[in-house]
Image 1 (tube, rainbow, N blue to C red):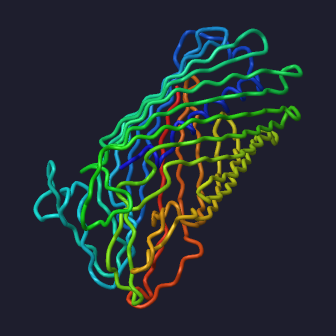
Image 2: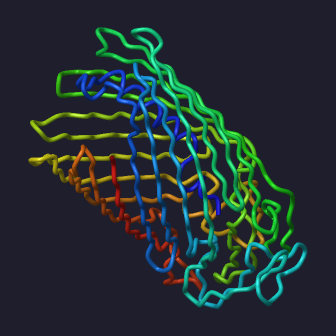
Image 3: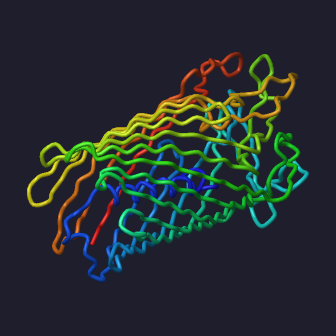
Length: 433
């Protein structure tokens, strides 16, 4: 289960690092806050994520350490551990008849045998009529991020970092760097960043031959992928209470892009499933994104509004609007409502199913993450001050995803929910000291 693909890659780390670099250059805290005292600042969090209907459940503890050695020479370290379990859609459509599938470790060259799953073995599982086919899994991921930033003279500042992640079937390592310069009495900051990531994909049971018949279980060797990213940003202090940031980013990935655990149903004219094929995606992908964020102080409160637009050469277009409003009360207590809206168009090669007897397209996938859908996140965060500048915070959010332009069922699949969407709950406990 490639958790890093699902939860964001080094491109997100680059964005975060560059945004922090921009913000540090553009906004200045009191001298008492910026003076290094040789101590570590620690942020710890425990995230719980649960999808409805027996789907993915995740528990993620995170510890972040930061230390200023003086003159803004800052070392940062972040350690993350993910534990995931549950069921993930395997791409096949629901059917009016029972469907049987083989676990990912099915033996090469056979239709899958019975018995318990083991080293090099396989097991079968059956999905009830009308149910969404899910592939059950358990996986863990450990990740570490190391960063360093410091000024270069009065107007320049740079940051460098390294990133490593490991799980049972996926390993990733990368580096990133960014440089920023202040202008106009430090009211304007320009930043340029770059990152490179190398991934090793080692699917359980071996990587299937892309586009091959699922019943044959044809397996190949492991896969690999590289990702190169770049970011150009500007932060502008418009007034004493209004800060604006604009980032333009691009990345290009090459290598193994398919999900080795996703398949696509093949249907005849009566809606009967006649076969399944392993998905096949292009081996290259280029993405561009524009991100605009506003931070506005309204008395003691703070408003944050961000907009993001992304497009790629797979045909995916997405738009995101994110709103935070921090209500500041006495003694440091605050409540922060949060809302997020996301809209995505489908990839050019997304197919809910393939017609039996027709020509198989060069690329195809029924992965719901590549479909057209809308998603809404809503929730709030509560921050509680503790002694010695420590802070306890609690966050609770709900996530709802609904499909768009879903083709109606016909024949044997008439009346079935072909894109059931997704509902999830998110809870997070954080402690900063």
